[in-house]
Length: 98
Image 1: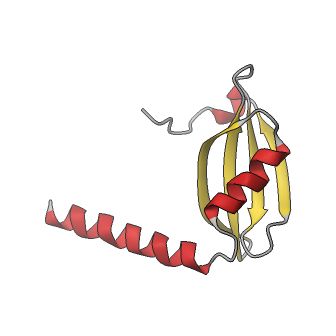
Image 2: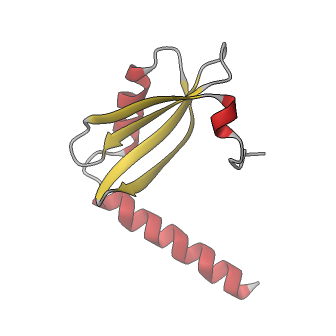
């Protein structure tokens, strides 16, 4: 149990350091992502590394659709790098939150 707690604490610490490295805050990145898909809400989001670059990646959902829209934003500039529709078939195998 203690090892599990240490691992969890290390993950949180790493995440906080990584978040601090992003010039664009999560709140600002979320606002940018939501402007790409009017009427959507954030289903999931994370700060990732893509080809050596820090990016915010968000999955947006809309109530009238089972599709998700992935929006990728440069964490340093706020520029939208990608907007991609993901169908339920493409989402198979993802871990869904409880």
